[in-house]
Length: 204
Image (cartoon, rainbow, N blue to C red; front, top):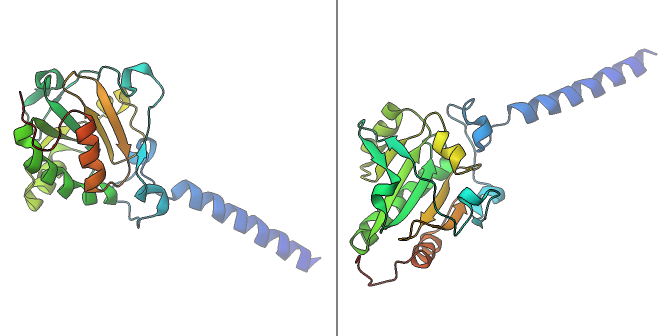
């Protein structure tokens, strides 16, 4: 009888441990972002893949008009998406606690440097507070335009579920591509080309 009781107790303990592990395991979805301050995750197959997706909802589907928004940058200045109509806009949704976002940020800077003269504007939308984002950008010497979305209003508007997510908007103001997860420079360059910037092209 004692042996049976011990076995049942051990089984119950194992189930409880598994449930708690699943509940406390950090992830990169926005639903859990508010509860994560500095998750520690190694690269895994699920997030090392690049995915292209047309999400549900006409307002953020590829080839639909990109919803306008107004946010403040890390220095408190207002910035509106509609002010960039006529340019190709790369919006990168990110946070400094996201390891894949940190890996992507040098690419964002490179793309801005490489394609700025051709009419590309890189905008990084951060989901933290301005002080944290400003410290990160200054520490690494990044000059990409950084906007604050601490309350996730724009992230929700664009139905962002995974960090990092890149949304590419063409010169016509329509969403050309959405890329989720870690990305290579070649993949991003191809996406930029599909949005209207070819090698050697210049902003009109």
